[in-house]
Amino acid sequence: MATEVLVNDGGAPARILPFTAGSALTAGRVVDMNTDGTVDHCASGTKYCLGAAFVDANSGANCSIITGRGVILNLAVSGSGAAIEEGETLVVDNLGDGVMVSGGTAGSVVAVALEAQTSGTSSMIKCMLI
Image (cartoon, rainbow, N blue to C red; front, top):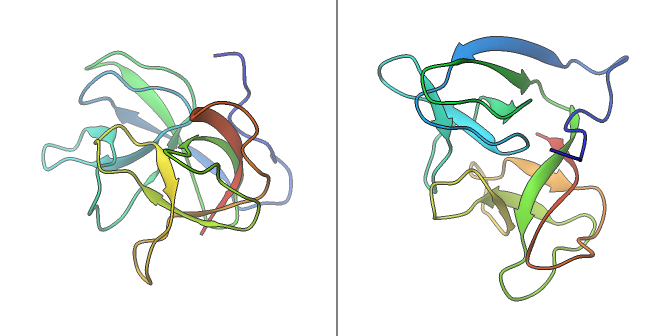
């Protein structure tokens, strides 16, 4: 992947933790834990996202997940209609692919967009995990 996922690596409370991928993972997409202990891309309605995949990983392979509140990452987003603007709250889309879209209510927001989406309907932008 051409875009770096982790933006800040200094004073932020970022942790890169090892897990096993339950399916093929794409870097910059948010993940959650399966009941068998593996991780997959988050789906809409997920109660808690662990963080974001640091690099692409094949199913069954070891994978690195970036986690922590206040961590600044480049995350995969989809504007599906209107582009995402700076400061918008982001939730997981309903496709089960770990891509973020604008919107959300208390308890479902995963990140805040720190920059506007400038290209296409699917891209990676700087966001803060909350």
